[in-house]
Image (cartoon, rainbow, N blue to C red; front, side, top):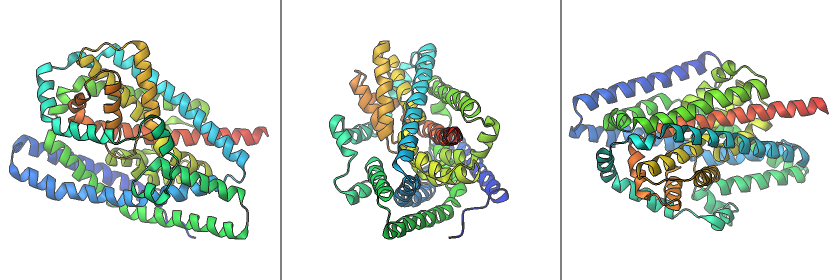
Length: 433
């Protein structure tokens, strides 16, 4: 089948600049509307019936294609390993990488949030007013969190009893488990018929990627709508009110992104960090715009194969797993948010309790939906676990969209770093052999 992916160079650069222009235009118009007509009724009409639906249609188109893309990419990635030994080696390296780098992210989060104590700088009167205003949204998140399986039930839910039901419920972990087992089956059964089945999975992947490419052309318009809604409804007021909290989250994310990831790329993968970040900027921009690791998956796969020149079996396997399991940004955000709210409510968490919170955040990040605001129910659950009022999540609802965009950028970039590091390890292993 011919390669119908968007060509590199001018076309890709053009799309990136279009997305950046959409971001700037939407933000500028939104701030202008917020300043000139903050309470105008027509603003609600525009955001509710024009810009809001346009953005939602874009996300729905992407999510519509995520399941077939994820299933076909993971099945093909596993089957292309060729043998169980190769699959086991790459799988174990991916797991080890995730645990080590997540541990580093946890350490950075703990140090930053305890040194700067963002919860101590919030005006209680303003915070209470914000909490009251966000009460309905907080209750909706708490209700959604109550529907999420916990403990042993959550572990059992990873293995689906009905794959069609799991796909309909958008249960990504369960779908990934099915795809993983299906790919293993293709490795174990080598017949002419399974070769045809493997070819069909490859074609499904190619068709889905082509459709994703068509949808992504709408990204500049969707980004403009997202930023217009955010700026027109909230302006910079919420960012200013919660500036200490927002600043701490951004500082921690920045240290992980430009510090830890640069060291991994330079020392472990032996590549230039500057070239790496230049190569992945399209995926990073898409992650920032959509606030969804799943929606960014096709762009990340294309960047890994065309810009980073990674082996496709490594790229597809690591990136599809990482879109759900390797979420450093989500774990850091959740941990900092819990400790921030504990500081605000005057609840002193011991170092042991904070480490427990961070451990739960890492584990919770594995099952967190790769969709906008997917981590908020996990935060609500952890708050209740450590004795912090879960309703406190309402304090951060206003700035969550912006922070979601930032942590998703870290998540997607981290997945590409993981794929690069693991691919380098595979190359070294083959040379040593």
